[in-house]
Length: 137
Image (cartoon, rainbow, N blue to C red):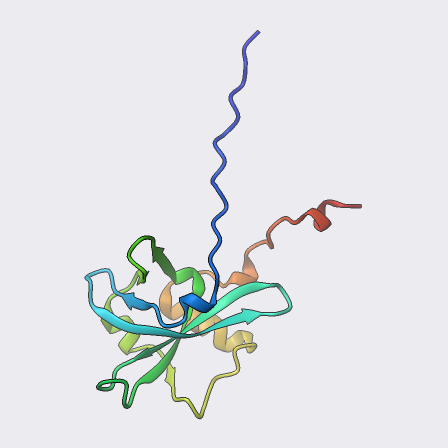
């Protein structure tokens, strides 16, 4: 009788959101891309949708804000920064906004364009995570 080894389970990883705000973001080539100013949560799905980065300006003055799909960011553990898997030019050419004129984050057309810009799949097109309540009849 052969025994079947179970597949290794990836440990769940948790992070508090408050400390994420203010973390630096770097490009693949190590360029500083700014810092996370806000986290945008899709309340209807419970998923983190976007991080809002401040970038540009000088000493925090004149910074432009950019929404980045959350799934485009990777936390570099132990280093306290996020990696954005694109070159600096991709962020520089992204649709940005200022503090007085935020986009409608719930607009799927806007979100689709943003995901296309970063080469990511919109979170609303992926199946939702399985939860205990979704397994119950």
